[in-house]
Length: 431
Image (cartoon, rainbow, N blue to C red; front, side, top):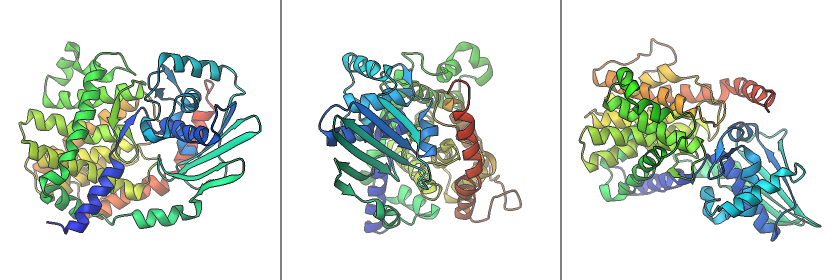
């Protein structure tokens, strides 16, 4: 068993990275920043200027905003100012009512009220700067590094908070030096009462899937897989149930349902993908509650570990990361040991590396289904003692090196791809 101090650090890390969120985390983070700037202004703003890093802009352009039936940033910004409360963090607009939604719609009718632009010459992948003005008064708030991390606030030239110079140092200080062996040991040996809270991820994200069945969200992928016509293709199986329950939750979230999900590393879709495949498999495989808790912990902590070196936002689709975690969790539920978990990771790295992120949107559920399908296949192969070897592609004998190879491609080599994706997205006729 790991030393108690290490366990406590890991538990704190999980609590930081596995949190509830309503709606896509990128537009909700922009709404959160707007809410804080409005609070600092102490009055309803007349004009709101928003400056975003490229990755933030990419991920917030085409996704549904909860409870609005609308997509994109303008309505998220307006509601952040009108109804947002920064104390709610990524559930910032959960007090939305039909009346305040109408106020938001009226506010964005005049294009002069909100100005959204790309922040030039910014190295931070996650950067949000919001300036609210009313009359002679103005207030600015900046989030950087993570979705809820305020690094700067000022009102009428008076600085209220400034942690910008410490941003890089904070990341270094907060980084817990994980490796896959530590992740495995924590998930499988930590006293159960210390990680029982992981069941809340199951409760949130399976509930989101069930609520999704009551509406028609996004491309309705989850409901399509459930229909009798699809049973002839997918069958009525554990596989089809896992794919459906995962896609359902993603459909609702990307479609703008006012349904909270448990996120992972700043992404609701990653939280869904790390949770629902594991939870559904455990239920249908009749695993014990302890096995479910440990599998969820393994899945989520694996995703957190991979994201540590990949970064909060990147050119690599987050479903690759979360599906790898889910594959590990499923291997554990199948009775696999550490070597089988490592084999599943090697199989995942060999398959999904290079899947691009082209922003948050309803079709994310299709990518998630691809990731979850690969997770199940990789798990099954590993349990049959089949794994991709170091003679093949970017896979290394050392599982941690394989993970680093994956994240290096996503974080560094795919940067030009990221720039091209953003350029394409911002120059389409409908943009």
